[in-house]
Length: 299
Image (cartoon, rainbow, N blue to C red; front, side, top):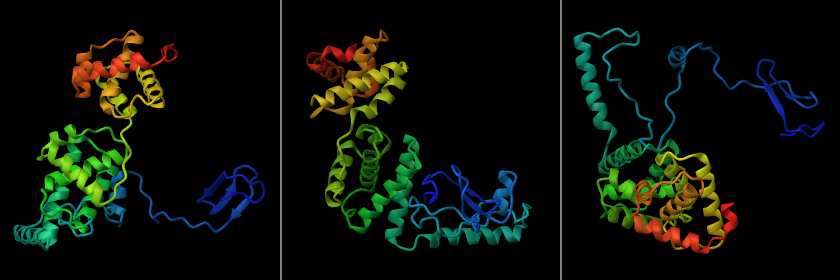
């Protein structure tokens, strides 16, 4: 929305006066603004939880999307008091049957196990919520397209997680995903290629710049090293020196060069260990960059 008087876009919504005003000229654009918030007030988190009447948001990481009713594991009533032994036995039976009816058939049982496996791997890797939701959505698409049949759940969940990381530029390698998965790197790579071809997932090649902050953090280097390494990679990409090379190797070589130039040198062995590549890879990428890059980038 823009102000019809002055054309500014700085509009302020004042819910106390129920007005929409322009911050630049003060024109009142509306005087019947509805407050979408609750009608009650809360002064701390406990009051907010008690007075809230809405449930948790819908999530794709649960097989029923979190829409089913959950019976709390604590044997207490709504006032926080302990219930009697007779009521406790009834709640125990209700809780048991509620767990059983949440999974009605084999397909839901498969999906529940796969999503729990996906959540376990994402938790061990410390991935954010959007990566978990995207991985769950991709696995659901694979189930709907009947791509799971004949393949292990572990390899398909690893492939979905790797594809989501590639899509959102999260610098994770297949080695790191296979280290927390119950499937091998070869199986995950095969499932990833199959899923990406069948679902026509378009993923761009990994940018070596995405691996630089992790390497700098692992090696306890200064921010200037990171900035110089990014400059080296950008220049190398413009000259076509990174095509056909592994992104981790290029990032490791750029970090090594920048650490030498800024007199914060780390050995090739330390950098190769942090990047999970061999010393030969770091040495080869280093020689290629040194031979073909101009000296202006180092000044």
